[in-house]
Structure formats: structure tokens, C-alpha cells
Length: 221
Image (cartoon, rainbow, N blue to C red):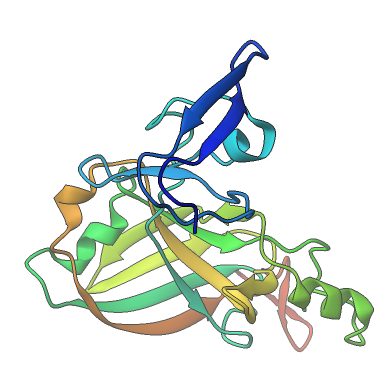
């Protein structure tokens, strides 16, 4: 504890020595600030100003890159081992906003984890070191699905070639799909409540170039 009236000095903005006294008894610690941020609930924003603590720089509050995100993740190592095809999501919403809002591309982006090596299993064929290394990493790249449409009570998201990668989200290893709210006013969706999700996979195989029945050519239909 530092008693009232204790004299102290600090360096001024131009290197001069500044003198001051404590106006009341305070608790002091030699610890340094590690993280500094500013938040604005009305604007749904979070800004990082940690450089001001580490490097004695100046920073303007409520400015810079907004770190606030609204994302939900769906993970499954086996189910999402699809290379090309469609993922159907049966969604139920319990609030006043219907589940079909998740298909509105102006509000949401559906993405899947990128695979570093692009192989079908996310690593070597024998499950070697490359697969293990990829599973240990946090996912740092996400790729967009080619489309997201709501039909017959289901949200169908489609992807082209390329495997859904393995990695960690919040410490959990899996293949991951996510839905990310784009930069928009969160107040528009505060009442959205997703109560259940059921996932179905429809994988696409290799399209045949020629069809035969015994030695008789068949026409493609």
C-alpha cells in the first residue's frame, strides 16, 4: 500500500521529469498491462489497444479493426469427410426469426476449414505425421461454400472440389463448418434462437464418361 502524500516522479511527453503526490492511499503493483481494449455495446464493437501498453504508443479509443465476431461452428470428423457434394441442415428456430434467415447471403457467410495439403483424409494416406500436425493446429483459413439455399425446410450448402480440413476450434479437433455473421447490425438478429440442427450429407462421385451394359453402349440420362 502507498500512503497518501507519497511523492513520485514520471517522465513527461518530452522527456522532462514530472513530480506529483498521491491524493489518497492506493494499492500499487509492479505488474504491467498486458491487454487493453475498448468496447461499445451499442455499436457491437471491440477494439484492441494493447500496443499502447507494450510499446508506449498512443491510440484512439473505439477505433481500428473491429474484433467482434458472431460465429457458430459445426464439427464432425467422419461426417464432413466429403470432398464434393452438398450438406443439408434441418434447422429449427425457437424465436420470432425463422431459420431460413441463415440462407441470406447478405447477412451470413457459410464457410469450411481449408485443408493444407488437399488430400481426401486431410493428411498422408497412412495417417502419418502430416495428418497429426494438421489436427493439432488452430484453423487459420476458411473457404466459402459455393451456395447456400433454403428449400423444403432445409438449408442446403454446396461445395466444389476440395476436402474439408481438420483442425482445432476452441481446443476441439474435428472437421469444421461454420456460419459467420457478416458486418451488420446485430440488433436486427438479437431475437434469433436456433434450437436444433440435424446434418445430412449428399456426396458427389465421379461422373462416368461412358456407360456399357455388357458390350452394349448406353446413353446417359
